[in-house]
Image (cartoon, rainbow, N blue to C red; front, side, top):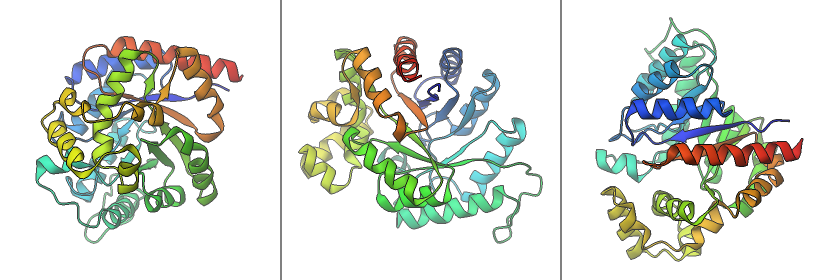
Length: 312
């Protein structure tokens, strides 16, 4: 059975380039292209529309948008509009949002789990033809699969029971099997596993840079485990919000890469992914780098193909 995979972009690059990278990924077998909603980066829905038009059959969607920076009804209308353009090619992804998207907007994410749950229910109702108060989308047709991303157990239970997909991101590799068992036991949601591939020293450094986002929003027990005290976390956060990941990375232990990424030679990475095939249904490749995305997509596609072929 072929391994299903997709790419996940933060819109830090020009939309035209993201479209070209999505086309490359599709030509190499990627089935899904998800775009993050970062508020101060390129607009989520403009980018999704462009990717939708630039690719042949890729599923596209937000991964993730949040309950705070956009009104839930506006979000539902945007998703419905995309689905009207390309029925069957749209997903809707929600999460609580993180520091990178909310802090530059001056938003205080009060009661994030409750806000996420309420927004998910409102969006689901609107996208299945129901009214939410005075809001209704009578022109919307079809069904849009939903995905929820989150690291906390309450969010993962919500996703398992109510959504079509659970997105597992920044999940310690050793915890994936147990987490997948809990997700599958709690409901019928399929699992998207998002993990960085660090198959050489250059990629290890890039991965560590991007873990600055994960580290500052990590729960206290995770921060303690990786030795990230409040003062250090504050420095990482300051550098990250300035966009200076090279400054942020000096405060992060390199052990993070081995805990949270798939590491080793390309063959070793393929073996790790192959061994974890029972624990996910779709592999998501995070794509944050500015300059060498093409090479990383090609190398990663080769690794994923090796993982797939070896398991057939």
